[in-house]
Image (cartoon, rainbow, N blue to C red):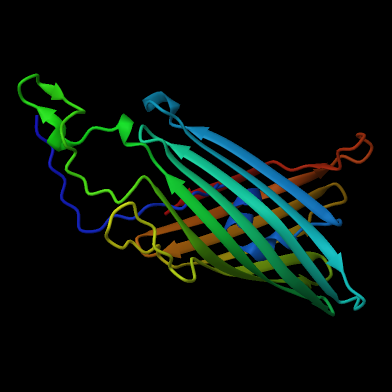
Length: 265
């Protein structure tokens, strides 16, 4: 059996979560300020595709602190985030550290926020778990790892600096309908990411998010949501809603919020 694949360009996908509670923070650094209180800690973990061999695992951690100023309508915020991703037989590993900083300004019922995200990304892989077409040994009918792979790897490690920008606008319609919209630009400098001697720039991406909250009654709130992200060679659309139930009186749990989202791209 012979399988031949022809391709002109291929693109890799950024590590991300589809769930908006984490996805917004990954795509738009200005959303790290979208919470009540003085600080926030968010973490997420995912494991997938274990049935086909080595599972893909992803973990994220976000910490953000609000900084009050002498001007009541002006607020600064800063934070740090970390992401780790491990995938496949090649043991492809990514470690990403991000420093987020921004400011928000309140004007009447409108709140504007802008943030900048400085990231350092390190990636590595291990050739030991891989075989290549040139390593097929006709004498044995199998792959021989001692044969040359024919691949011109410059190394098994690479790292680069990445820059992301984000902005949000929050307002209230009719004193009841709270709406927050955001836009972001990711990989602004289009950093080079390659294990080969040839250049491979990451594609600049743009994102847009709209989320809102509308009370249905004293105990029930509706949270419609839409998110779109586009980069050359890939796009993603998320649309759906959450419903929050007030749980006042249940010790330290304020509310329960189940959600349903549909993803396409």
